Image (cartoon, rainbow, N blue to C red; front, top):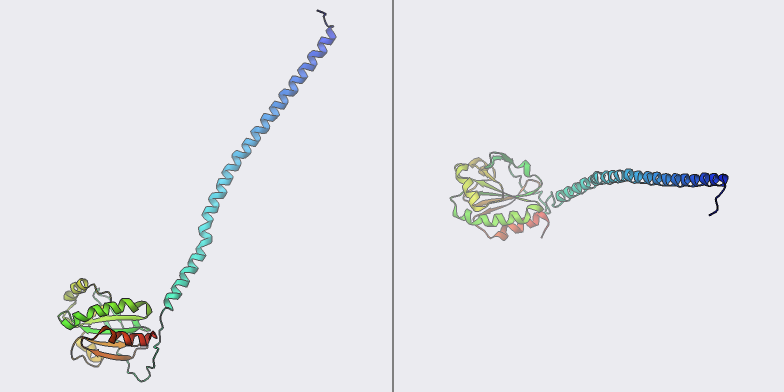
Length: 230
């Protein structure tokens, strides 16, 4: 085997070291670049999560005005669901008396509270059999027309609310009951027997007085006329 001169060996050694160094530098640079890219991804992930969280939190705030607007529109529709003036001429009718009476819950109810509605005022008592038989009719009318502007008010002529409360619960009466008296009965023009009902217009006039037990349609025809439903 032929030996190479010393100078040639030295040159080869230098070239070999240089190549190894270059390769190492490239590997280090590649590793560093990969590490930088990984760090960038690691930083991007929390930022993306933060952006998603921020977006999800912002959504309700953006939809809140729309929700409030929908609620306001719904309330306006309910308020405009029934007419607050009679659909018939009431200029020749007499005024219904103003009243303020205590409900079974101890809170007062007044005629002013019901302004703008058709009010069916029913004078009755728990011991009155015709009154008992008319109650289902009144419940049906109240449930059917309450969203269209009718309010039924039962004015009890019993001696006190203690006997009325359990009766109202037993009969599942859904309209308000107040404790009436002889004075308010006289103010309406007198009540000779019960049941006696008065239909009061939206502008506070007595439209009809109905005495005794009558078919439900007798009330309903007047209610529909005042509400403009007939």
